Image 1 (cartoon, rainbow, N blue to C red):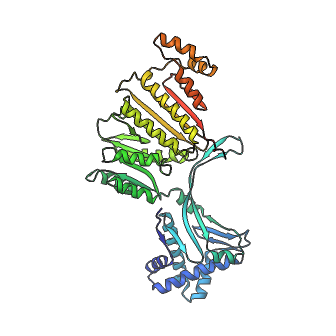
Image 2 (cartoon, rainbow, N blue to C red; image 1 turned 60 degrees about the vertical axis):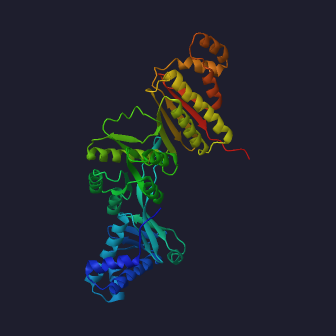
Length: 448
């Protein structure tokens, strides 16, 4: 991941520009500011930096505020108090503003400061004991340099953002929205303008290679993809089928008249879609909603992939190939991969044959979910459903063969496929209607 970095030189340049002083004087004041903070930390004091943060090594006894630090700068540099105070505030302002833009600040021999993200996680409510999701949160990170660690006798240094800084962190949008459109799409400027106004950084790519390069750099939190762009499906597959990008929200923008429920060929789906023409403000709202959703789902899932297909042999073959690739990368043992592939092939075949009656205009949909413990695959057809409970009961009791013979004589569904699937997965479920089958396979460690 490529991250912009600044150091003392750039901060000194900001001080020089801000208070109109020579750069060597600005550098001297900056160094004295850092030295003063270091001395107070070494002396066991809590150092309070106005509208920024409090630093303390260990427990800390006594408090030091801006005025005391500025007084030290005056004594060591011989500049006026007014000039020292202005330079001190300019230094904090520069560090604070760069951090809020997602820039890493490296202060040699003192510390590296950056803004990170605490991922959403599952926690237990201390009162009720129930599990709940703590949403993702921007956090200020402080990594003390080795010389500072030695000076405070290896005590842990706490870096606690002020309330003002916490409020600004909560509103911060360091993430990039990746906008993928054809080269001569004039609407892109309108989208870019509105997202920039809302505080988002927008990067534009007009080809799949350029898109992949930007994804490799990291820090992409949401993707807007024109479905008519050349290579759009290749991009969808790259985003959704690779574990490191699978949970990035992907919004597809379709041309006017598109029926997103009836695919004309096998396709990897986005998380949401809009059909042109659309209001950019609605797209912005959808983007915010998707970011909130994905933040919570990251606490539960490692990967999520949805694909749709018409009921035809070529697309069904592609769906089976895609499922095989996902199972191979999931962490399942080879034996369990084979078993799940067999169950999935049967489920998809049943959906095509019995649910959709092999009608090409009837779509099939597959949802693949991977978490730390298991794989869940749901196959949805467009049929009327069937009396699935009877076949499930027969399969579990092992008397499905005789029942299957009777059903075949009557020209009905036999139930042998359900028995096969029950043997291949840990859990098999249907929805009430009977047109959605869900397969669950737990991930077991390989022996040895």
